[in-house]
Image 1 (cartoon, helix red, strand yellow):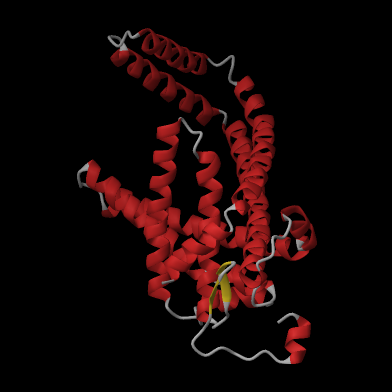
Image 2 (cartoon, one colour):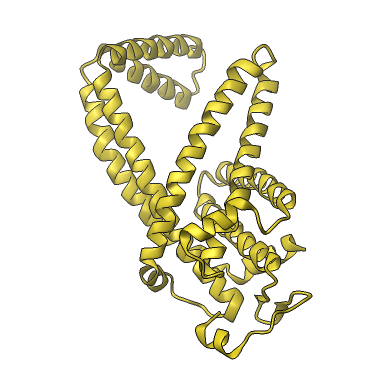
Length: 319
């Protein structure tokens, strides 16, 4: 039933997709500009390295022959690319400072991008909550500016928690891939690796699923909402974990198929729609778990079995 309500809420909030799309494109532009400021000088410093010239030359010649329909020399090109890549790694091993500085810069940009995306998710979540609670169409930019302080704190903590969780997940996946799965067929290794990655992502989303709704809908502080979400006081953990795990597979398939079928054009819609889909489920799950009534569209209201009566004071406070 929660999946059905999520789909209805998603459809009712579909216009938020375009607002989130514009925001994501702005963040992508900022990220691309900052990345170029780091990558371009780094590549420029490699322009005089013979191994880098061999590597880029092999790629250019291979793509030129492929466009001409000449596929007879692919084996030699693969050999040249391998040799050039090994030579480039040897050079970087002798000059690690450039690689370390570039990697640190790109890591910082990735964190900044994640922080900005978190601000957008907070604003989109506020819009979804307003629509579910009052059927109001709140403006995206004004909502973001109004809640900038709380949204910044939430996004900062979310990025920090996600960063630590990602490091632990990468370490676990490394152990599984190169130790636990060692000796298996490559296809089985890839299948098990992907399965573990999806399960870890589902676990993370399950643990943090109530965080944003508890802040926006439950009027809790950011830290209180985090403790509430991580403790899983709302219950129904396995169903939530199952939903997020299966949703990760569906979202991955939808984005990959959309990208391949439209030469990347479909990602303009599927990426922000994926964010919005997960946000809608979080709010539906929170409202159902805390017996809060909400609109799924302008004519349909979902009411809990035991609806709590709102006092005059609570109504005036907006609770």
